[in-house]
Image (cartoon, rainbow, N blue to C red; front, top):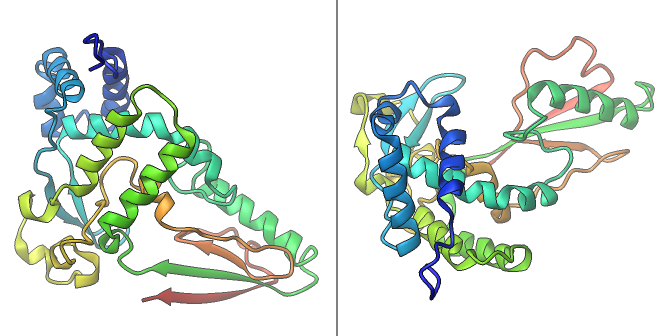
Length: 268
């Protein structure tokens, strides 16, 4: 709240974040329970955000097998609304810093756009398939499970200070601190059986990450954008190898990799 009692984040902002949040989550039990009295719940959440009493609740941890086996920490629906509220404020600034050749979780892009763009880059680099070029496919092992709290917060707050000048900046940074510092693995509920984790590498689980490193979980809205200041990915084109990081593009067009040599690397 301001000194005059005016809310820094409007109720309309919270409702807009809610409508965006429920777009693909309306069938979950947590979302349905929230929607039974969503207006009262949103007003309560809005008050907690503005008076500084909001605290994230426990997440639900489970393991999925498709497209690869991975651990997911799903936040409560009301916390997901807060995640969308944060990312709605920061997304335009994140988009400005992203490489045009970054495709994941971005409006107007995605797998099909990535395939077409990579094919275009290969054509350019290989001089229309007359010279050799290279595509490097790599993955950062356990990236989300090994982010340092302090470093991420320092970079996020520095980034916000440099680009965001809204009156709610202090409150926005407070919400980010609460989200990033939440001890997910200590307060979560397990959905499924503990045996689900048996074949999951320890490097891919928050349960085995050091307490000062277990940070932004896969499954939280905005995980790509929120962790963007933590990493810098450079894309090299023309005669240098073209780096395509964290992209698993399936069903390649037959001619996509013609004339291109493929290099696989894993960063441990």
